[in-house]
Length: 149
Image (tube, rainbow, N blue to C red; front, side, top):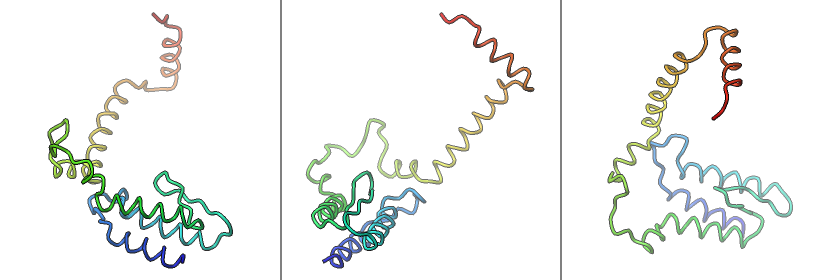
């Protein structure tokens, strides 16, 4: 019975799309990794094995919990909730389209934003940081003795 559950999970993981723009942050890749780990570790343990999968406890040795997890993931994959609760418009508060969001949330774009922010942070740090340790201690002493209003 465990083998058939494992095959069901494998089939679901194969069908789950992988977004190549989200290197190291893709849900499909994460699910593949965690399901393989849960079943591998679940076979090697006795009794109840609890494994975290996206905040949920994934219990390989308990058939009901395992089936429930599969059904939940299958509903997400099939866009069950998207069809059950349709949106009147495909926009958000920003007015950006889905393609624009995908571009913004790609790993490459987020890294570019991080570099831009790091540049600004470094500039501020260099501007306000004292040059030697003596000045640093004096600045802290002034800040601590200043009356708070």
